[in-house]
Length: 215
Image 1 (cartoon, rainbow, N blue to C red):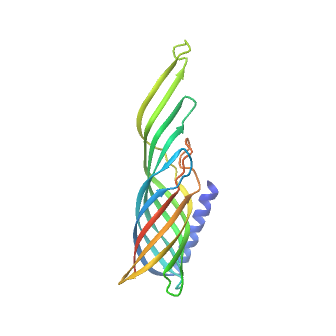
Image 2: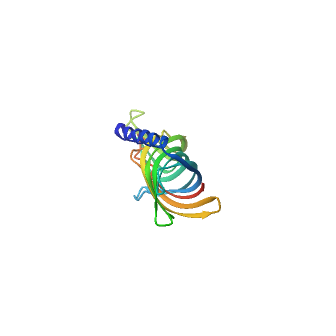
Image 3: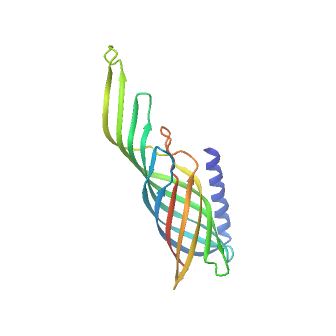
């Protein structure tokens, strides 16, 4: 975790230093449809959304450095979660709200520079998370007769979510419209670390971004 954080901070510092020597190219706003991407028998992927603003700094006609601020909401459904030797959980809906700070590079492909290839790193800072589902707990020997005690109940609680660090990559297409560009760009955000210490939960998701870039 410390190494991942160090690499992210180093890349952010390099990008900011490079931006001071570059020219502000423009700003863009976007909305996105987010979809978690887990392929196991314990998880069902769910859909969330996002929005944000980014600033681009032009180093030449094909390359741009970019950074900004994003809000991302992701959801996933866990059929079961292990908690401890006495308790287990099932049918959990997990909802995570994040502020994200990306630092990336955008490259324009082709003679018209319509195709966009973009990649970089990011930090996800959670500000709210909830989970809702059924928890069953059974404790032995509470009456010293060898009987089990406990039961199941529906639970809604705030989750403890750690910051996430990762990389992203996407390919999009630019459509010039008067004084703005419309960009449609899918990308994938891969978080390196678990976001919860107790459960094996990661936050990795595909986004379909609809972007308006102001020239």
